[in-house]
Structure formats: structure tokens, C-alpha cells
Image 1 (cartoon, helix red, strand yellow):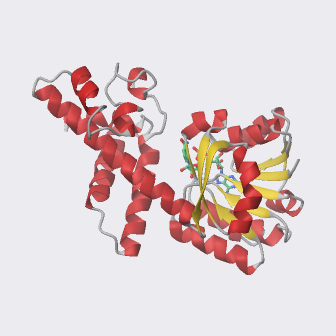
Image 2 (cartoon, protein in one colour):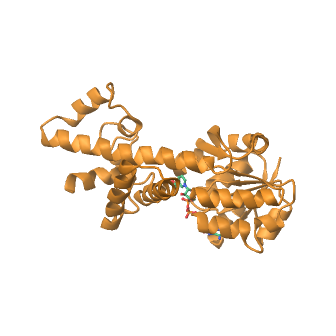
Image 3 (spheres, rainbow, N blue to C red):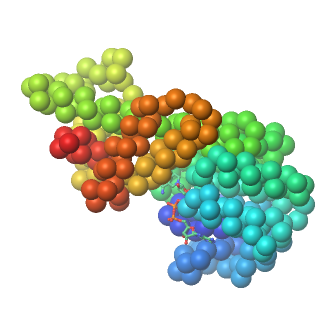
Length: 295
Ligand code: NAD
């Protein structure tokens, strides 16, 4: 059993913290929203009064925050995690954030002699609840070995992607593939529709041909073809269009900083920005097919 401090008890963080409690860990939680902390306490956790109280006695601190700004604030602030954590405390940030912030916070942790990992996830709220997340982890071999048993209780796949920040790199590259492929699959179905090819026929053919991909066979944007797809539930998220846009923007920022040319990633970001601006920020990202059809 470990003493775990968990900061950021939102849609993802709360079920993750609840799964740590179920696995027998002592979890102290912190969130700027009191109602989220109350839910953790109701599940058997405790409420930490401050970052200092949470981090100073913890074996592990896990954060699940919206973006790089909050992660920098929570770790680097004068009363932040790095100021409070003991030398043996392992730090794990599972938020999806920009690579530069992840590497800056990891470097600051290292300067203080603290082990830190970036460990963003894929799998969404359902994966967080069912403890089937995929973790993409950046940091040292030694820190990864310490974190693995904890992350194994929260996910079914835990991959060490390399040094600090590489978890975030893996996450944004994966989601750039996903954003581009969802638009490509949507365009193909809309074109088939206009040319008189039945959606079921295209699915049967492409799912066994070279067009096969996850966006087609696991998360099909056309209703009625893959029973678990959000398309069957009026595109209720799932993974929201706003989240997809966030990740595509992170990928573009990273591509620009690294001098990489990613024209399809750039177009995908523009298309999702228009979709989000059309009032569909909270819709599942596969609803982009409606936008493609109407555009
Ligand atoms: P969320 O907005 O539901 O939760 C974030 C929580 O952090 C909120 O409860 C908020 O009150 C809290 N918070 C914000 N600033 C804080 C601070 N300074 N101190 C303490 N608490 C603070 O977001 P989420 O959906 O849980 O996502 C969290 C992270 O996981 C994001 O980086 C997101 O990109 C990533 N992610 C989300 C999903 C998903 O499907 N929701 C999937 C994969 C990855």
C-alpha cells in the first residue's frame, strides 16, 4: 500500500483516484472544485488541505490537470509540489500538456533530486473508470520501474516511451494520426454516399482492405456499423471535439518548435477548430463527419 497524493479530480482524475483506493492505496486528493474532493472522500479517500500537506507525506504524487499552465503552477509555484515533496516521493503527471512544459517541469524536479515522469493516457473516461487506460511514459528507467505497479492498477498497457517529455510526444503524435484518420474516413464515407455506394458495403470492403484503421473499424463515424461507436448515440462523447482540437494544437505547436512539416496535421487542426466553433465542442470528435458532409 502506498500513500498517494492526487491533484486534479476531474472527469479522468476522480475515477483514477477511486481505482487506486480500490487497489488498497491511501489516497489524499486536492482539487479547486470542492465537490470533486467530496466525491473522493465519499469513495474512501481523504481531503488534503494544501499541496504542501498532500505532497510532504506522499510516496507518490499524481496530477491530472487540464493543461501546461496548471501543471507548471502546481509543480513550480512557491507552495507547489516540488517545494513540498520529500526526496523519495515519485512524481507522475498524467495530464496531456505541451512537450516544453513537461520537459521544463521534469528538469526542475531533477534539479531538486526528485524523480518525475510524464505519463499521459489514452482511453478516455471509460478507460479511466474501467482501469483500462494506455499510459505513454517519459522519464528515467528507475522512475519508470517504480511507477509501473501503480500505473498497472489504472491501465492495461503501460509503455516506456523514453526520456522526459517522450510520453507527451507519443500522445500528440498518436492523436494527430487519430484526428487525421477520422477526417479521412469521414470524407470517404461522404464521397461514397454521393457516388451511390452503400455505407455497409464500403465498411465491409475497407475494413478488410488497405483503408482499414481504428477510426473505421473501432470507432466508425457512420451509425449502425460498429455497435460501440458514439455515432450510434448521436455522437455523445466519448472523446470530445474540444479535446481533439487541444491535442492537434499541441501537435502543431510541437511541430513548429521542432521544424517538422505536418500539413495534414495542420489541416486537421483547422477543420476541428471550425467544427468546435460551430457549437460542437462537447460532441464526440467522430461527429466531424456531419461537418464534412455539410461543409
Ligand atoms: P477536467 O477538466 O474534467 O479535470 C481537471 C480537474 O483539474 C478539474 O476538476 C479542475 O477543477 C482541476 N484543477 C484545475 N486547475 C487546478 C489546480 N490549479 N489545482 C487543483 N486542481 C485543479 O479534465 P479531464 O477530462 O479530467 O482531463 C484531464 C487531463 O486528461 C487533460 O490534460 C486532458 O487533456 C487529459 N485527457 C482527457 C481525456 C478525456 O477523455 N477526458 C482523455 C485523455 C486525456
